[in-house]
Image (cartoon, rainbow, N blue to C red; front, side):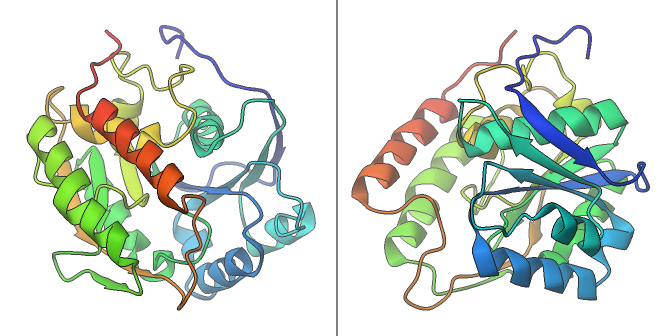
Length: 263
């Protein structure tokens, strides 16, 4: 990473064991509570910690859901805690990607920590596609046999009629579910200096969209895999709620759709 412009906000790291697998799963969380514990239990019961190393990227939770001993007991490789004044999911993921590349992983998958995704059933698909040589693996709940339940109607409309068609148009790749934060990236794509993966550009939700826009243009291989995404009834476990946050996200997606690479 010597040739990259690296700007990583300060964080605390707890490493529990040496690298065991080719790939790493990064889970950004902040005060996810029982949903996070439920997800971790499903992952442990289905052997996820045996086939992929797991980093928990915490934004500064205060609900004890990311208790050090609890995280260690599940079988996670590391707990990273953002201690900087710069907040956001992108900061937490950047810290995770940075540690993963330093450790020599051949690829990294990112997924939310609020128990919406079927990581316990679908992670193997991401690992297989990375093994097959794909550089971007995008989850889809809307096609290829994917499934979704209780997704807010406005979110479905925004994803299917605005965000996904827009990014498909500007990227040259047919995407069905770009707002799904469950994605995988190869090491070679993360380390491409043209992307500036570790600059201060990434703070919020940029990793969700920016890499999708530029993959094909830079000569990388992209594939979608089916997953399930289930929201609890009468609740939206997301940091993006209400008109104003959704409008700001839409503006960011439009900007990212027409973004340029860093070099």
